[in-house]
Amino acid sequence: MSPLPPSPGAVAIFGGTFNPIHFGHLRSALELLESLSLAQLRFMPAGEPPHRDAPQVSAQHRAAMVELAIAGEPRFVCDTRELHRQGPSYTVDSLLELRAELGEQQGLCLVMGCDALLGLPGWHRWDELLDFAHLVIMARPGWNLPSEGALAGLLRDHAGSIEDLSQQAAGRVITQTLRPQDISATNIRGLLQLGLSARYLLPESVLAYIAERGLYAKQE
Ligand code: ATP
Image 1 (cartoon, rainbow, N blue to C red):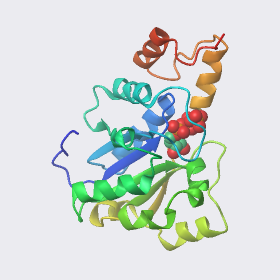
Image 2: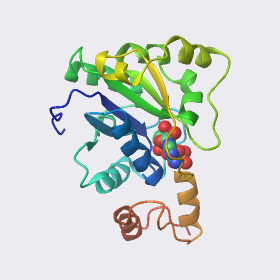
Image 3: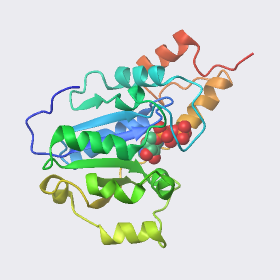
Image 4: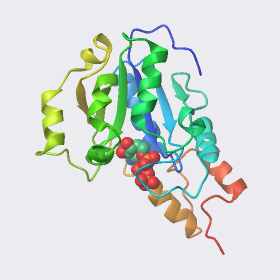
């Protein structure tokens, strides 16, 4: 794992299936890096996602595509810890490990889109996540923040500021409105399965990787 750059900023973890990674992920991550003055942003591909059907493309391929996509941006790192863990990959376990590695003082943020936030109450030990990290919620086209229920309460009770992310280790929630990128991996897989081009929705290097291996192609 790349060492942390000598920056007082927080470290952010951007989890997902990245099946495949696309410009919606990448542009959002870059904007967060800059608007939150992060020291580092780590893409953390899920090994065996507990909340959805297993992706038809292996975790190794998904991580390799993340590596290709982030090449050349030293503040981006691919954290493959969930690929090496047996059984379902629970975010809380990864945050526990990261907290042990980074120390008790380091600001640590878990980044998620609004869509992922809505599923949070189904996550393993979800009510403990804020013990280990802050939550950074990205607005996403077509998705609204919850206005009532447990999640709305969480957003309200833990609301923090950008400064909190580096001054405190964990426990705050902030929402960020980024440049909307109406791109999804589902949409990209759909195009490729129809034999259509997904160009300009994701990096050329990732597209070339997909084409060379015939990933997402329609199965005969
Ligand atoms: P799928 O279509 O397969 O569900 P996805 O494009 O939503 O995939 P994921 O890997 O599931 O990508 O998403 C990882 C994280 O990235 C989630 O928190 C999700 O909200 C966020 N995300 C995905 N696409 C975008 C986008 N276009 N803009 C901002 N955030 C995004």
